[in-house]
Amino acid sequence: MYKNLAATLVAACFFSPVFSQTAPAKGSVTEPVKAGFVYVSPITEAGWTRQHDEGRKAVEAALGNHVKTTFVENVAEGADAERVIRDLASTGHQIIFTPSFGYMEPTLKVAQDYPQVKFESITGYKTTPNVAAANARYYEGRYLAGIAAGRMSKTGVAGFVAGFPIPEVLQGINAFTLGMRSVNPQAAVKVVWLNVWFDPPKERDAAMALFNQDVDVIAFHTGSTAVMAAAQERGKMAVAYHSDMRKTGPDAQIVAVTHQWGAYYTERVRAVQNGTWKSANLWGGVREGMIRVGDFGTRVPAAVQQEVLNAQKAVGAGKLQPFRAGKAPVRDNEGQERIAAGQALSDAQILQMNWLVEGVVGKVSR
Image (cartoon, rainbow, N blue to C red):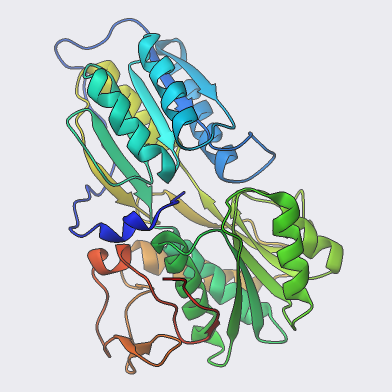
């Protein structure tokens, strides 16, 4: 997850599109590859960290005795992260994954001292010869979830519990709102900012407050299942994020936007094994299999499910772009035109997003 407005400084587009299988190369590693993972929160039943740990397990399943993985959970961004990353690098780990934006600078710092170790800054954007970066187009899933929310909401008012007002989160809020308004042009999305990624009590309180404001469906960009649990408790509906959360909200969940890291992690560890690892910067979405929408709840009619799945295929094929305007321009919630009619935002513009679309009730602190 991002945690710093420095992300708005990202400009150029630099992303390689898909994963590829590589043949063993000369000088490849014959001993098991030691792969380390650093997690920003505890490994919970569902959520951001859970999905990355599922990715780690996928590496083990794919590579068997050719890999040994290590993980350290609940590591604070900053000095603690640098200490943990350095410890992994000094104990023979050949590749280290650091999936949190606040880990980017500590990763770069340690990488300077361990040029033979490969590092993967997940949600970071700075690269060096031994530091790669990767992120997912979460906003694609958000748009699709917005379609489901727009079809299911009776009040036409959704809530959104958000961590920090940085581009990744703003992309999600805007895409979700555009998805809702594609099926209900009058839909509104009320946002509550928490300025924290993982604080279940705070997440729950924000959800409860939104439910008291005509909100009957809610989305969130936080790290726990607290918002889903609150929706279940109040008899409301919710969009799961990161993971399928039907276990937490069997009656509340309408759809889940899930992150799939297993293929990417496996490919990168295999590249270390083959001696073919190279620094790169990937921004993958539905097409690359990194974002998936599904896991519908029992309340969602078959027709709505099919509508969302058809839209997902269109996104994967490049026929549907969340940040492309139709016949009318897209404006922000202060009335300024942001996307001209018939035009689409470039990746650089999406990465620097610092505004909220028309229909969002909330502000971006600048």
